[in-house]
Length: 153
Image (tube, rainbow, N blue to C red):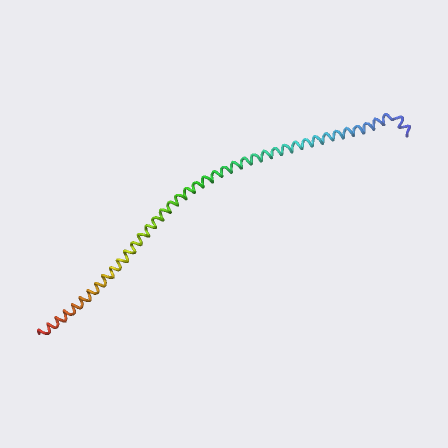
């Protein structure tokens, strides 16, 4: 066997070199492919992160714009509300003043009504007293007429 190795050492060394050399080359080739794949993945990851960052930036810009529009709309609505509230307050104050005046007038009318009722009661008493006096006078007159008609007869 040693003799076969010695006689064919060139062929054997060529085969060994081919096997080990090809394996080393394949290993190097595989390593380069892995580096390229890693680099490509890192590049894709970087692009994805950049795309997410850009998307987030546009979202934030849009959100800020919508927030400002909403803030402006709320400011306008608050101004309109305050304006309407001012008008309502003015109207309420006018109604309060009118109510105060009406209560004053009502007190005056109530006082006048009370005075008129007192006057009516006074006139009623005078009427009743006068009627009683008239009825007494009439009764006396009838009695006198009766006496005089009885006395002349």
